[in-house]
Image 1 (cartoon, helix red, strand yellow):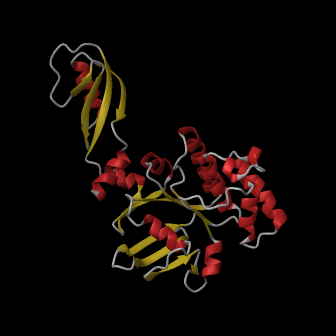
Image 2: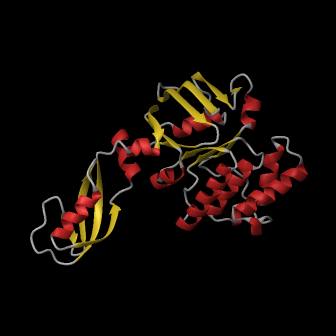
Image 3: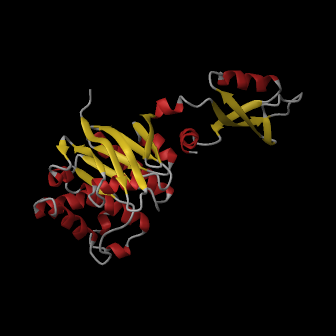
Length: 300
């Protein structure tokens, strides 16, 4: 059985005025996994991250980080965490290498080691040619990568990424995915919040769905997808049917059909049936992201 990297037990947060942001949240993040925390805006994701970064004080519950009691030894617990928040929170007139080196200093990393690590992580994140540039000179995507380098410089056991792909174009997002997978392979535990369901499906070992401060479900991507009772498919076709297609096939255009694949049904049966009507299937894809369908079914 894998060791537990982060244990969250019955954590609640009630703000002044009675707003309950978190309600008895229980989460167990395993060492070395990528765990996705999904939820709509206002679900409680950021509140939970703010508690871990001590920006917010929880109302009740307990937390252990790498076996360290969060309340009993907060300073040590925080050394095991690297956090990339949604908002940029560095001096825009500072050089990016200095920003990363200064962050290492807060954790007692000697300056020579911090400098080497800063160059390493900034280079790995595609910023090696901008070490002496100021943060103000960076694009939004580059600033996001700077924040990841800063979070990694003290080499924490657990990296928390809060919407890391926000403001990043498709090419940079793919590069970031590769980097996340690379540092994951080194044994680091990663907690990821994202609105890109494709990102969660591609990267995460397990996913927790949270809404209105309550964890609704935790499971592997496979477990969650197994709940789907049907898949909405888009079929690219060639040819002219020699008779009217069954009602289950909705024609979108002359070369495209839409239909449902019911759970337990064989895709081969669909393609064979269409072939029997005089059409050839040249391509098949899901109409929507499958994890998105599961997610929406939980939070609506």
